[in-house]
Image (cartoon, rainbow, N blue to C red; front, side, top):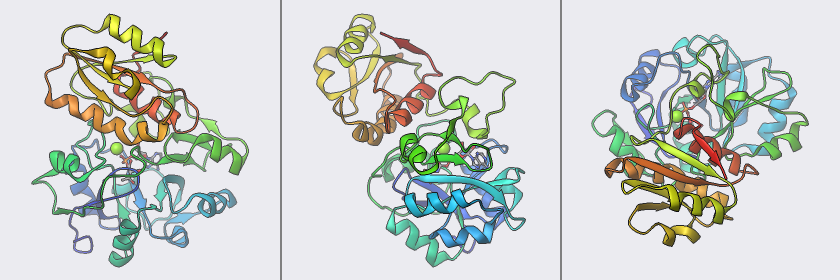
Length: 321
Ligand code: TXA
Ligand code: MG
């Protein structure tokens, strides 16, 4: 399917992807159509091993090999200078390209068998939460793509960390499964792009074009309440109205009787929160809640990625308690 220009849902360790042959412009255009994705939002290329970097990237810095050695295969995407062989349709005309070697063994086997780099955004309709299992991807893509390979539920649950190695110092564009702390340990200085932690103004252009769009958002508006677990739970319990939904840590579920509640795991298990956050956001779209309140972990480790996804879903509507 990939070789003849089809659209294939692929499992990865982060989220399900909507894959097509990254060297076939027409196939790549079909990705944008199926997702309803804005044309100026570039795609990343998935490769089965780091050595493929040289086929598609120019001026590869030493830092790229350091990161590939440490974190690939794994949930990390590197932004590098592209070679001309990469179509404009993939990069949205940028002179850089995002490269990722996924940890999911079945995914790598599919790419290696196709013997083409696979362009794949997350397999959701543009703007919706990313799919972390086959059922979620079917909900958005049934009838629009050729097939989905079922590789089980995603082990990480939030998309890959994106690091821009064309910036000096290297810059974190999107937090994910490889943490900021791990990147700093490997590279020394790493800057955090402002789009990670705050709303971009109308005239600002984040380095990852996708970070400017409303994202991950359920239909009902979301408010994130940050602070110590018991305090944020108490705040939500006293402010939630009759038609509010609640996203909370397991320990506090009992405090929201009468509300539709989606738990995302224990307060001290950010890995579990990452695995469940998209599904929790998605579930509210099949209810008629009018607003959603969400507890949120601190920003350490993969907590930065959970914060980023919840904050974006909330349009950065955040209350500190
Ligand atoms: O974990 C993941 O990365 C998943 C799985 C399927 O691999 N893919 C994914 O793709 O999340 P997508 O398209 O949903 O998100 C890619 C992000 C977008 O925000 C896009 O703007 C940014 O990467 N991006 C892609 N190419 C870029 C480039 N050359 N420079 C800056 N940002 C880029
Ligand atoms: Mg996406």
